[in-house]
Image 1 (tube, helix red, strand yellow):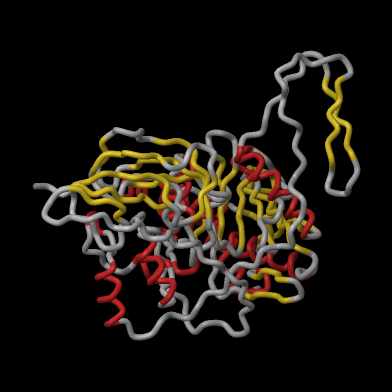
Image 2 (cartoon, rainbow, N blue to C red):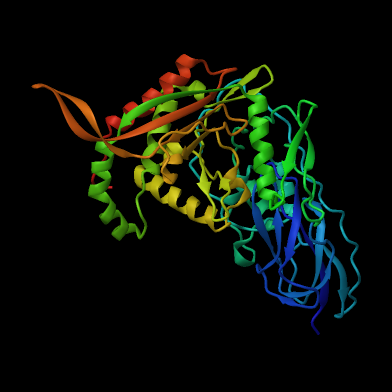
Length: 467
């Protein structure tokens, strides 16, 4: 006789610094069958939207959390009844049938780990190889073991799993610990900027028609009230969740960092001609396009190696020099929002590897398929305003970083070219670069020299045509 068990579905760990999530929408309702690893609920963090899969085959018998509920990591969100064999790390709350089956008490949910800011006094010896998220579900028990033993998420993703669907079980963790030599050097946590009031928002509309002379009284972060008039015929639109987060982040960045922007113009002719030679062959071989973004990232990485004090964060009166070069790239989503996936250890990639990584992250950003860890840990950000036909931009720093680079549209323009026979006027492909930086720690000489160096790498580009 099959033994029926009721198990708890716990909110899994969703990223290194994600401690809670908001329930958005249940994909399965009470009484519906569900297969193992099938998504059952959509959730949202302050980083990205995601889905929680079922850990077993069974039937959803109880939904414990409702849409808009904020749930800590490790807390139960649903109960599923199953006849499957249940692994040790899945909490069983009731057992029926079989010989001598007894109810098992529900274990207390694992609390979300608290993070502490760490000031790095010396750089670790070597950077690990780049590793992307593998999308596996990790139970709270497995995560608790990893936390106790100092196993990072990157290291955890490399552990082979013997559970269903390749999941890592308690036995896998214990077997791995027996053969593990020494834990890798800890990575410094990104310090959070000083707290500040959230960006002001309009009161929720009441649905009443706009009255003549209607005014919203909106508080500002400096304590004064701003009058916002509304006229007949105007439409009042409530900000969605993502827009509110973006607004708060932008206001915070301007509040924290005194922004300065330096501009240079780069001759992109060599890059353009090289890309024209290789793009068709690359598309045939890889099934995807080769854009300019991988070349931009390539140049940024090399300039950061020349000027490492651009790759820093500020924690009070401490400066954290980052060993890893994690380049974020702003991507516009179909809804019009911007999201910044991160190429971790960007200096470890070839141009071909960068092209494939850029395309993969951009595609999944537009499809809403990014994992929380893929939009965290950036140390420098690149945004391409040329995508919208803009020549220049003054980007806002992505906290807690201290600099961001904007690339403008590449245009054919007449330019003076120096030759051995004298100066001539020729048609060249030109592009403006805009570098915004935190003037607390990046002076004009450093900020201006850095963006000039990026332009130098682009102008002297000697790409390998065998890419």
